[in-house]
Length: 178
Image 1 (cartoon, rainbow, N blue to C red):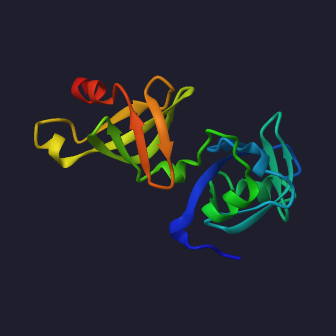
Image 2 (tube, rainbow, N blue to C red; image 1 turned 90 degrees about the horizontal axis):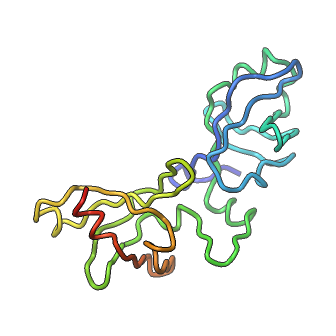
């Protein structure tokens, strides 16, 4: 079943073909490697691809119908996508964990001050950052149009995905220093 394009997001990128039987290097763009299991399907520019085997220790994947290095080379550099619906169905979160797509679009407050809205979540090194589009009232006071807040406990106090509100501390200081 195809999903709406607007709800799809990237979960991996395929690297080079490795070996003689169609295995490929898999570059994860997801915190959930468990979704890459035999039988799992992902959308790509070449259509839907179904995983035949996945070696999590070496990050190697093989897709059904791609049985040689030559066939696998045609998939090099393809992005793999899945949907929010499929992700919610396949991945079980622990308390305090959130899907990035649930955080994007949230309003970020420090006390009563609206700092802005989350445009995306970026991973830089081992740390995730909330990339905010600064609220217009602050931009009119010569603040930057966007800035990053580390997604760490000492900055992010509360996340409410139902109301799409995130409460932070120290975010205004980061904005002023940006």
